[in-house]
Image (cartoon, rainbow, N blue to C red; front, side, top):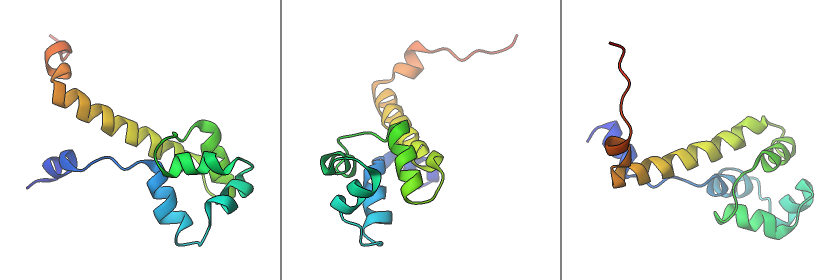
Length: 106
């Protein structure tokens, strides 16, 4: 099986799952502690890690500051997630192939 086929069969990973599994859990950071550090309500954090809230520009900036890293990391995770969801939807429906032409220079 090649890389493209493998990628297409994997479900996109929400940034909240990455936040939980790659940051919060290894660093022993609770939802309450993260919310307090970010200056937001615990429900806000809970919604992100459960995939019910997107990483907005504001969220990316808050997470970037809290973890002392570039906010772009967080916003790029969200954009990648949304692109994969949309790619899967459009490929499954055939919309791109049937409705969008490929421009070619004559």
